[in-house]
Amino acid sequence: MSLWQKAIEDAVRKTKANIERFGDQFPHVSSNGTYALNDNNEWTDGFWSGMLWLCYEYTQDDAFRKAAVGTVDSFHRRLDEHRQLDHHDIGFLYSLSSKAQWIIEKDEAAKQLTLQAADTLMKRWRPKGRYIQAWGKEGDERNGGRIIIDCMMNLPLLYWAYAHTGDDKYLNAAVIHADLSRRFLVRGDDSSYHTFYFEQETGEALRGGTHQGYMDGSTWTRGQAWGVYGFALSYRYTGNPLYLETSRRMARYFLERLPEDDVVYWDFNAPVNAETKRDSSASAITAAGVLELLSHLEPDDADRAFLEDGLQRTMTSLVENYSTIGQPEAEGLLEHGSYSVRGNNAPDDYMIWGDYYYLEALLRLERGIPGYWYERK
Image 1 (cartoon, rainbow, N blue to C red):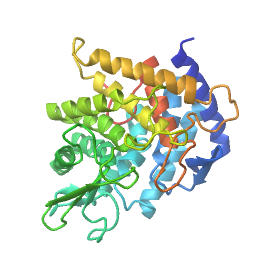
Image 2: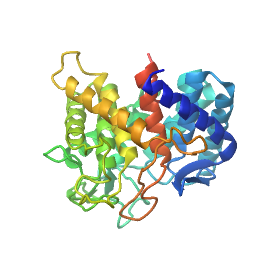
Image 3: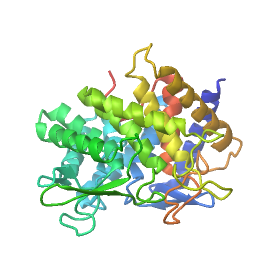
């Protein structure tokens, strides 16, 4: 049994045990090894749905399908009730739940729900500033002109909606936002800002900043990871070589700065000492993103060997040093993830998105099963 297969089998067993543990609720982040559960009102809840669909694809065990369909039903209700959808993370929520069901089963109701979710995300589009507002209500004094790099992973919902409707409003918003993100969130040295602010009425660029990073000018490792994966996905949908180049550059920046054990700290600029927190979830996201990036590169590409080496080192360390293999009762798959070190919110524990991307990367390595960001050919 390969190292990847061993890790997948462990993840599948734990995910199945968590179906009973979590019931109709959704895991978010943990405290002392126990996941905090919610009634589908967090931005992270799609990741649990996505894990269930991945496990179903791998095993064909109907227990996973039944639980996954139950989460999609919950996402139907969430959209109908407009519960906690006043942010840009609609792609995280619905790509991994209803879109996943459409991709696997071609369920028409799931498709229609996903299109409704895309319309909900479009409500975040600000035509004056020409960006997708991350947080807060339109015109909000603090957040009205703010974008964040995480949104690169929400754009695939809009690209997908364009592919299924032919309505170019989805494509235009996604491309304009991706171009803006590439220009202002990615710095000249290939590092990234977490957030950027614009004048709301004119779209004039104001300043870069952070919400969860060490400081405004630092590089939050999870933000860099979102960029690696997100720009590779924008390339998949548009064929714009600038997006592929941006993903490549951001991946090199990330992998060139791996510490001795190949799993990153929470910010590339945070002082490193015995107390500095890791973010295993940032490394898992980057591994999944590098797999997507590699799928677009030619066999003789000059960066292929470097990227493949960084991927192998990262995934080997996650499995051998950060996974909960050998802890059969563990709820999470990856230890030492961080939600917000800056805010002292779950700075060192399980993160459901870390578990999801770890499993996605493992399944792509072992079985060629990607996530649910796009249709399979």
